[in-house]
Length: 387
Image 1 (cartoon, rainbow, N blue to C red):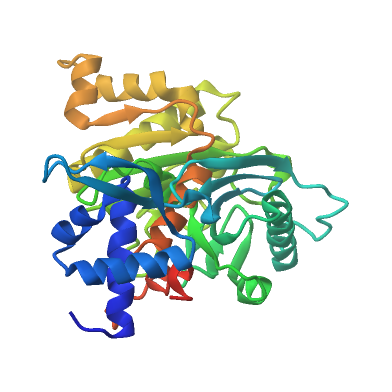
Image 2: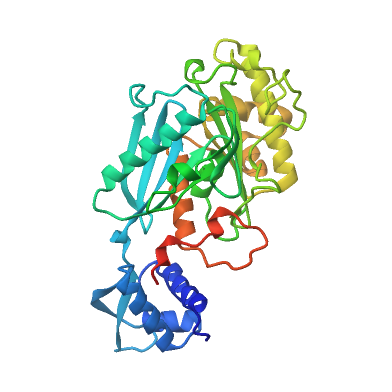
């Protein structure tokens, strides 16, 4: 095999990807990766120098040669951590994970108006929130190395992972965080909240499914004029996030939206949306409209399943009833099976966990040269920058 720096990165990344699934013997790595034993030995030694790989003190029998013992090598999960953030207007949730995806710690906190002083809906406030969150994370990690983090935002995020094209919730447009995070020793990227939630439920590299995220907010925490309900649609196709041609996938926008008259995402005006909890007719209007969109999406994409998460769980029974009314000949179980709906509960951690998983995927992704579409996950991984 070629001895270029790029090939060294490829070899080391392949080994790390294998070790993410558990300890392996050198023999297994040689056979499965189809490389020379010397290549595996060299790569493992470099990974050990970086403290990313360890050898087990115990030895186990190699199944390929009875009686022969082989030392196992495994990912050093304690080499560092990554974090995922669910960033809202008045609060945030953080999941910090070891390199093997297990939990290091989590943080739930409301923003303090004494610290976050800028006006809601301003770029300055958005930066203040990010800086405060990063300071809290760094304090929690203390002497533990941070390899990077992903911050989820309700809105349309550019492919570069640094620009909020538009967020109704935060009431910001074309805000780039590069100057806010460029002095950090680790990379920080932004991602749509529904996309992050979807990542948590990805089963394998061939998986295709949707995660429908409904989020409601108290009126007083949002900037004036911002709808208190939003719908996101995280789409995974063949194991990868689908962002669309202009990075607008994830933030579902209604194709029949009329400026100034309706909510951007549903065929229902904002006045009705504001009364969902008080007005039964408004709630039924929302449920029926939401179900129409779900059934249309299901027919169009034919996913493995559609996960219904976020705040919609309080209406799960009503959503299922609305679907059943359209197909009176089917039972509720047949409805769930036919249309592959999965009604989730207790999804408050999905976004932060998904953001953390997305950052882990970024760390362990295969190096990419001259990619036709440059998403932020195709940037150089900080894991092997010193290789």
